[in-house]
Image 1 (cartoon, rainbow, N blue to C red):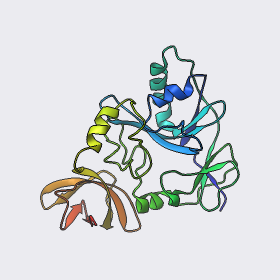
Image 2: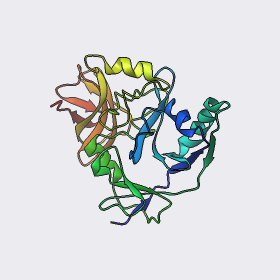
Image 3: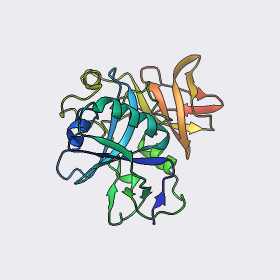
Image 4: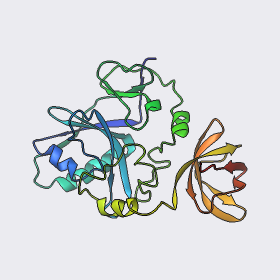
Length: 251
C-alpha cells in the first residue's frame, strides 16, 4: 500500500553542535542510543504533565522532530526558552510526513509505538488519506495528541507511554522526570487509558457513569470499541456515556 501524507503534522529541524545534549535533558527518551531509528517521546512540564508528544529521528547533521502541527509553534517556543546559550537551532524543515502500512519504502522507519501503526517517512511522496488510523489506534490503545493526550493535564504513564516505548526510566534527568519516576514506582496506577467496548456512540469527551457515579471519560470510538480514561477502582458493571453503553474488561 502506498503511503499517505499526514497533513496535520509539522517537522521541526533541530541543528547545532549541542542538539543531542540539549534534547537529552528535555525529552522522555534517549535518542542517542545507536541504531535507535525513529524514537517516540514527549516533553513534560516541570510538574510532570504532558506538553507534547512527537517522533524524533537522529541524523548525522540534525534531529527531525515530527509533531502535531497545531502544537509546533508553542513547542518551538518552549525549546527556544530552554536552549539559552547552547549551540542549537530550531526551524521548520518544510518536510512532509508520509505514513503507511505494509512494507516500508526506502527512507521510511517503523512506527515505534506498535507494529500495527505501520511506518513513517519524511520528504517522501504521499497520496490522499485511505487508512482509518483512528480504528488502528483504538485497537492498539494508542492516544492521540489533543484528544486523549491533553496539554497541561495528562500524565504520560496513565496514557500508556511505557507500553508505547515513549519513556525511558533509565536515561536520567529530563524535565518532569521526578514526578514520572514517582508514578512509576507506585504499586499500581489508579487511573489511566483503557480500551472499552461501546454500544452506540457519544461525542468525544463524554463523561462515563456507573449508575450516578462518574468513573471516566470516553474519547475516540471506532468499530464498536473506544478509548476511555477510567478510574479503575470504580469502572465496573454497566456503564454509560451519554446514550452509549460502555463495558470494560480489565483482563
